[in-house]
Amino acid sequence: FDNIYILTGGSNIFPAEVEAVLAAHPAVGLVSVVGIPDAVKGELAVGCIVRRQGAEVSEDALISFCRERLASYKVPRRIAFFDSLPLGPTGKILKREIVARLASRQRHAG
Image 1: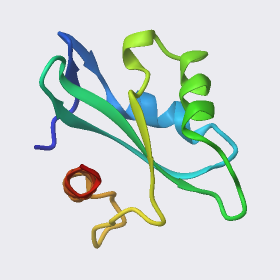
Image 2 (image 1 turned 180 degrees about the vertical axis):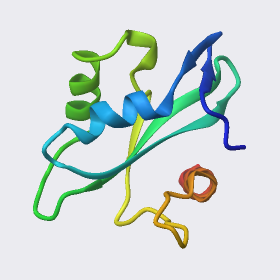
Image 3 (image 1 turned 90 degrees about the vertical axis):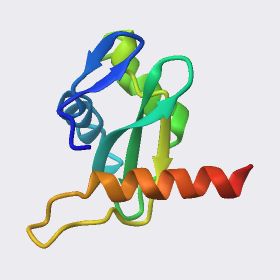
C-alpha cells in the first residue's frame, strides 16, 4: 500500500510534493496526501489536513492555493479536514489509517 506515488489518469503524483505545497499554507498544521480508488481515474489525490489551532481555511481555498503552485493533474481533488491524523510510534503519519477513515466517512455519507 505504501506506494511512493498516486497513479491518476495515467500520471504519477508524488504525495510528498503536494504535501510540501499544502504545508506551506499558513492555516495548515499537519498534512498528508493519500490516493483513494476512483472508477474513472484509478486513484484520486486527497489532501488530509489538520488546521493550525485557531486557523480557518476552506477546501476551495486550499485547492486554489495548490492550483497556483502545482501542475493541474497534481492538485488534490478533495481536501478532508481532521482533528488529528493517526501517527505511528515514530511519529510517522499512518496513511493506511487515513484511507480507512476516508472510506468510513464515505460509507456514512451515502
